[in-house]
Image (cartoon, rainbow, N blue to C red; front, side, top):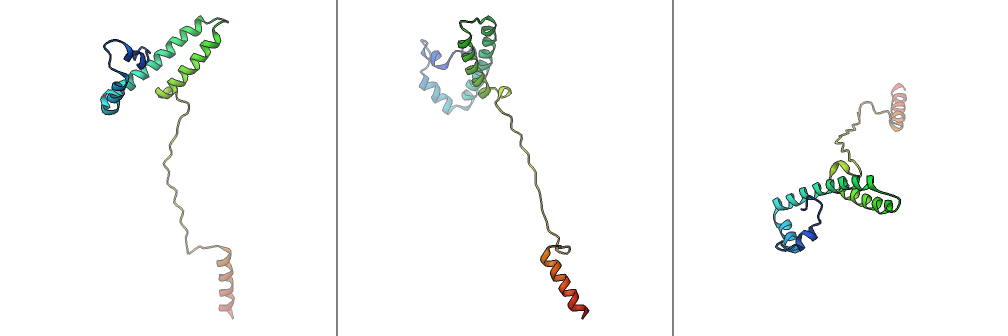
Length: 124
């Protein structure tokens, strides 16, 4: 049911279903169950997008704004659950830059002045 797009709150209200708080407790304590819920929600997000394509094709002037708003919501939800619909892509660069100073060829202004004055003292 969750994979077909039915909200978890509605599923838990059905007779014979566990309470919403019990399901949240299972999600918190059972990693495998939490992973299954997440997978079902990802599939549901894709199901919502598929339904929206059908609704958009059947839209008319009277309901286009409602359809557009629903599509916006489902698209946002899919961007959070399904990585291919994400808002942005992140590029990680792991690069090391090393800067070293060679003391023998130090051409700073201070060292050039020092070298000139040492050479003039040595020549006298």
